Image (cartoon, rainbow, N blue to C red; front, side, top):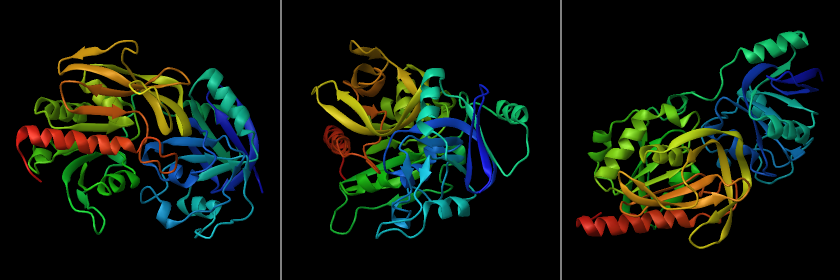
Length: 378
């Protein structure tokens, strides 16, 4: 096993051993605090152009399988673990984690102190990173190569992960169609339309470049804006679509990237977090109920909305519905005079807790009320 190096753009270098594919790779350094769910993380398109550092020391013991894929491929730019499991022990496993990463050409590194790297990122903020294995660069040369790569701020990445053609996710057998939802794919996870379909929603997933007119032509009961990678400030086309649906008072629901896009459609700015929220154990407070929900996150940007009061927008009054208990970041928005809401996290809980699945029911209730007020039918 050969040496490998994890190199941050501030000059910090961590020496470990090569793991998975060999070579060099670059991206934004992010850390995930989940103890499980690594396969869902790897196949989440929101991690495109990011190198994921797992804080849990032991990763890979359950292997990988086709059923838990959140998309058609592994999207991470690189993967960093401390102690990969030497064997797979799960009846659902179809392959080992290392074999799956190698087949996908994902460069990894093992044997580094991932918690020390995480502390470094928490103290100094998100930064660019490279993994080098099987190369012969000097330390200075590796740092120079990392610093020559692009940053996540200003990155327009959703076009690289969106579907090329529309497709439909229908309710499972025995569940009738109650609502028709148009979903804009900015990097959608498989579990999201599946969660909606289980509640009687027929979901048509559209490429991000689809026009508002094309989407409205299908006469949807609601619009869903998905998660995805990149800087929300670059998503002007989708922001404009959301505004058109708000004007027509068609229900809108956004998660993660979609939450940031709704925020921008309402007139708020978005900003880059120091190190983001990633993992399946993030505590969020529901402002209305006072209930604390444990939620699954993957975001490096946030919405700059007022925490201590209701707000006014061109679409009427609204309020901050959820806040993060770790750092006070706005985690949810809802309008009072239009049918629209969003959350910064993943209610489909794949992998993760189920505390937030009620949000899909909230979307269904919103579409039902909207349909009644407009006198329309499924």
